[in-house]
Amino acid sequence: MDIRSVLTITFLGHLLNHSLTLIYPVIMIQLADLYPGTSLTTLGLIGTVHYFLYGLGAFPAGWLTDRLGSRNILIIYFLGSAMAVLVLVLATTLTQMALGLALLGLACSLYHPSGLTMISHASSRISRHLGIHGIAGSLGLTLGPLVGGVLAAWQGWTAPYIVFGTMALFAGLYLWMTTTTDSSHVSPAHPQAGRTNLLRPLVYSYLIGAFMGLAHRGTLSFLPLHFSEMFHGSLAPVVIGGLLTALVLASGILGQILGGRWGDAYRRERILWISVAANIPLLVLMTVTHGWVLMGVAMLWGVINFTYQPISNALISDFSNPRNRGTLFGILNGLNFGVGALASTVGGVVGDRWGTAAIFAVMGLLLVPAVGAGLLLGRWVPAKAS
Image (cartoon, rainbow, N blue to C red; front, top):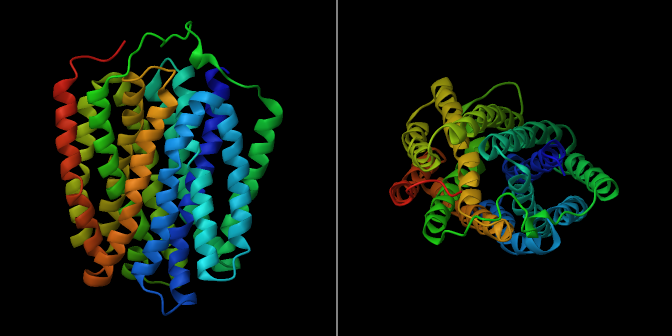
């Protein structure tokens, strides 16, 4: 497929992926009222299972992408997500809802290794095209809490899942009927066939991804709840939390654009560690600020945090052979989302003990090892792979 077709398919897939996985932090506000005896730790644990499987499934998803092709895995992702949503919305207890979320996490885990691999095989301007792909993810992250908050306040917590699940169903059917299989990555004529897998820089990239996943997921899991506690008005708390979080995530679109451009214009290894390090002071400031100053700092964090993604994914392409790229993307996303899932439980414990504001400072401290790995990455790699 040409790059325009690839970007169209992956744009929709990425948007739906992050919309579906970011509904839960918003409806957590509503679930706390529906189940008043449930602690933040318990609700965080449910989120941990959801996000842990979202990350864990990326490991086999990458391996399957290299063997079955990106297109086939994307079809399974779309249709599997729709079926998982059906299980979720039919739930009548908190335990059944947790099961539905677990299945949804597994289905959504298929997306990133297959989508990123498809782009990497077709693109000659990898950072920029990954930046466009990242914009879709930021839109999904924005629509998840925004639409999720509004629909949950209007029709209950199942409504946003029904809307996005239906979109996934139709997208999967469309892809199934209109495209053919892809196998260019196994051809010796592939333009990137000469690249080799570089173990040490891949390990550094994976370490950065794991700690960034912790900080990213921990921040986004509790940002809606923190906003609903800090801001009051005529709107329902679930709407306030979702709306303000949506504004923060919308600012990530600018970060994706900047990351895509900077990744093609400058040495990617250097831009990567700088973008990671810049998260730390902003997360600390989010702990100690209030009102609209807090909102401004959070939006700036949204810009900085999302510059990381297109650069990080482009580096995996730089360091890998196309035959193995699905597996290597699967490892990155498995670590990023799987390890990041632990942040929901860690954040719940911190929030129960010291309040939601303290969660963000803890997430900032978790990025210190990522900065160290980024410095090692920049020092070790003498030049980009061919």
